[in-house]
Length: 307
Image (cartoon, rainbow, N blue to C red; front, side, top):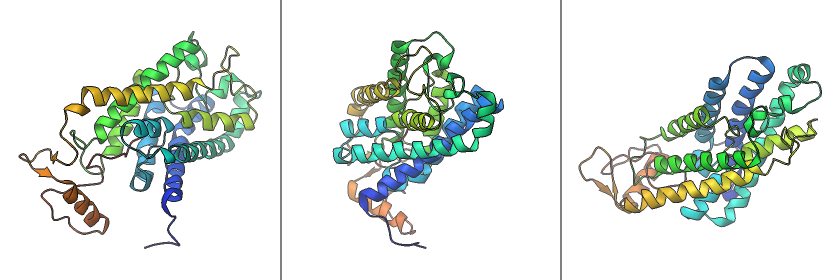
């Protein structure tokens, strides 16, 4: 059933990126607020909630926009996967707006407990909203945090491009978001010490702006007083290009062409581009795809990525 008039083209894609990123931040920032202000849970619950937030956000937006939910992902796709450059800034703006609005909602919901734990709105609870070197307590400087963000985002993009590349062994239909969420969980559990694994400029800058506008005067600085806000922006953008580029060099160039996709589990069955498109159209109409193999939403080389 359709409700109202369909949002056209790029505006619809931006709305999807806004909504998907907001879902991601509601769970991600929400769990950090619960751990820091409510003393409920710990690092593992933070890692799992961020990963589940990614999964749910991708499910929300994937059909419409590809569910990038991350300006670094959008940028890397434009560099390596022919994503339209004219959409890079609109997508990034929508992602930033979604993160900002979601962070405001978390800030409002946890306002009483945050005020009790940290009445002065200091670095002590700034980490609820944005990342800090060494998570605000460990001896990690700006350049160590930048290195961490480059490496962490490179890992993210290398794996996400692998998972969503239909020339490779992509997950079965509708399981892609789950696998991408697990990638984020793994990064959180292994790469969360030095810089809080932002690996997403919108995830950090949106909540950072929200916290600044609601009383955190030092939101753009780290615990040493240095301007830090640029690190979770620049690091992920560099890392995303490195990660996606390494995938193309090490793996992508050895895979079959996109118009000759071998379906995993079937003996040398190749689907040409027309068959893939036909199967996707049939699925959208709720009909059975009468093709050599069934092709779900995550089949075909496309840009359904997150981070």
